[in-house]
Image 1 (cartoon, rainbow, N blue to C red):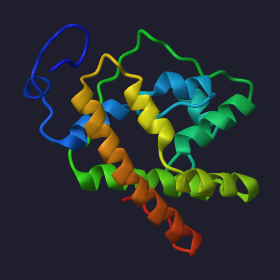
Image 2 (cartoon, helix red, strand yellow):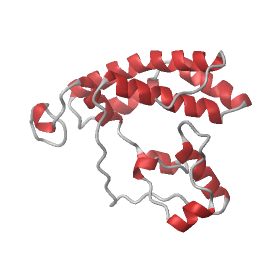
Image 3 (cartoon, rainbow, N blue to C red):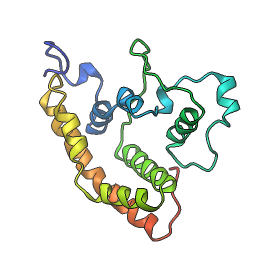
Length: 179
């Protein structure tokens, strides 16, 4: 199996024991993509403590996406969000359906909570549409073994149903959940 470069290695050599680990590995945290949009994921973000406290830290009212909201405040105060390619963060992959589905619900709940008006309509519409962008993202990684891309696509399509259900629940007045 080909994962990166020309190496032929088995799934076990990379430490994947199930499809959810493959999915979370493939999905990753595309920090460079986030930073190009002016935000950053907490798991890979470094902020000076003084600045963090001065700007009020993360909102305690946020169920998810507090890192993105913080970056908006950071930029509004004239600071930049920069990507440092040489910085490396090791992040454990999620290893169960429960863990990837919980993350999907939490993120969708955070997005829903932060959106209003046309932004919320856009979020609802985007959620109802098939996850084409995510699937294209997986398939653009040509250096990744095709089997992994297929597995990640399968999990993403399954998560699409979770996201639709979560948005429907929130539209009916339910509160977002952290877990």
